[in-house]
Length: 166
Length: 210
Image 1 (cartoon, rainbow over the protein chains, first blue to last red):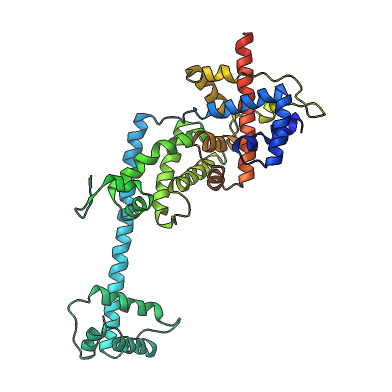
Image 2 (cartoon, each protein chain N blue to C red; image 1 turned 45 degrees about the vertical axis):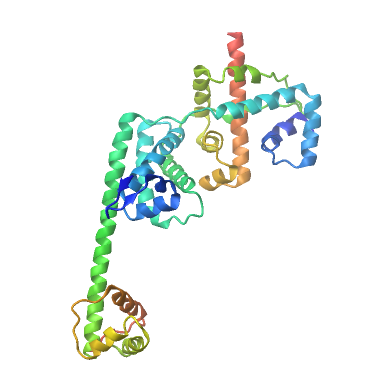
């Protein structure tokens, strides 16, 4: 071990990640080399004292300007998302209503028709509601949980297949 | 206690939990926006200043960071701590700003690396000024000088130094934030400290001979 190697390895020596046999070598060198003892002390002090460096403080005027900007942008961003969600929800409702109308009128494509019939017979949430539709009852509103179930059929339509028979 | 839109009261301390804070941000809670701002704006600006070294650039970078956080809040998966995710956004925002700009004047780190003889010994005796500096620990002038020296580091070393030694992050966290390997972080940090040690050494020496 010489001074150059010691300086190269100081970081690991101080953070405790050094292997034991290397540490012993370094300890041995430090014990007999004044320059390296001094280098170790000053390197360690540098490390400690530099932790006192303060990050630049934000000027008060900018802090308030930034706060106003951030609050406004967050609101804007959220309103954009809400608008998109509302539009997506309205579109989903419209599509489900369209599906139900076609179901009542027997205009669903063969695969959708099969899905609806199976769902009507097996789903506890939707069964009664769908049987009423078979009887021609037009619902005033579609309950939210039923809408969610039926909306999944929109995803299940095979690619290229038209959902409705003309 | 803060009042949410639904009229339910949201204890402010709940927003100290990263998961709750993010969930509330995704819902658009104004209290969560305020909590995020209060918790991070100072750190983000300080980090941006230490990379960009210019107030108006740091101001704009800080704005960019908050915008990115709002846009990407839903993509945060919690694989890392929230602060380390935000610091990463900050570092990226600053590096984007530095890109294309004329490189800032920095001192060559090589001129401040220790010098050795051919057989690996110090070329001249090393003095121990550690006690002297410890006595001056609270000295404002010393603080100012150290800040000046850290500003002279090129951004490659400065960012690692600020995250690790000033912000006290582990090497692993710093590596994750900067997209570096842990050995690369250790190596840059070591060179930054060697540079600062030598700068301090020369400064104290000049003080004695002046």
